[in-house]
Length: 211
Image 1: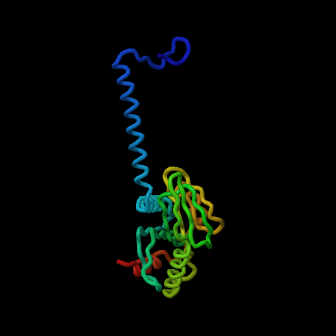
Image 2 (image 1 turned 30 degrees about the vertical axis):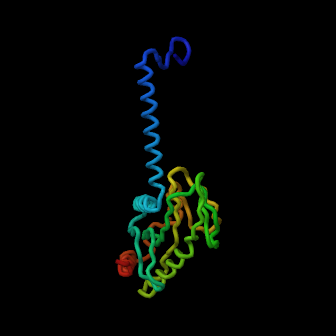
Image 3 (image 1 turned 135 degrees about the vertical axis):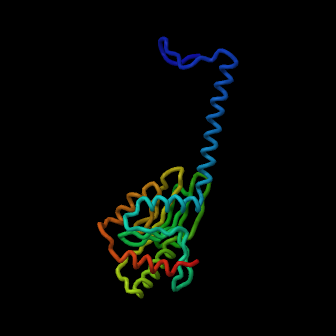
């Protein structure tokens, strides 16, 4: 058996050993493929999404910066949990991350959003109301401590590792994908120096962090 023209031969299979070696090569490739797919599926969950998004934010954040992962703050309405909270020189970002979904549908004002992939669909609560409420309450705490004008905003990241998710959420969704997060973040943080007393705000947030 050969492929190509002239005297060029891609491979020859003559003996039983040749066929066995070829079969084992194909089988090994299939096993590797299955293991890769299983690993990717295992990473399509909330915990893995939070871990990889916060890890990348640490690399992207402009100094001075600080990131809280899986943190809860004691606010006026009670304890509120965030997947992550990023402080950088431009402001504060309240993170919600999602581990799967290749198509995301919804509106900034809608009660629920929907995510899909080729095998499943799921409606989930629009994360913006809770994140905006958290931003408002954190802002009031900062103001009560004499810190005014700090930008505090939601950041919703869809981190499916099969492909770049398609977002159909409309203007004002504060949303991006893991693959496009660098571009989104650069647009939001385009300042050359800290816009507030970073150490003071860091101390205040540490003081409202729930144990």
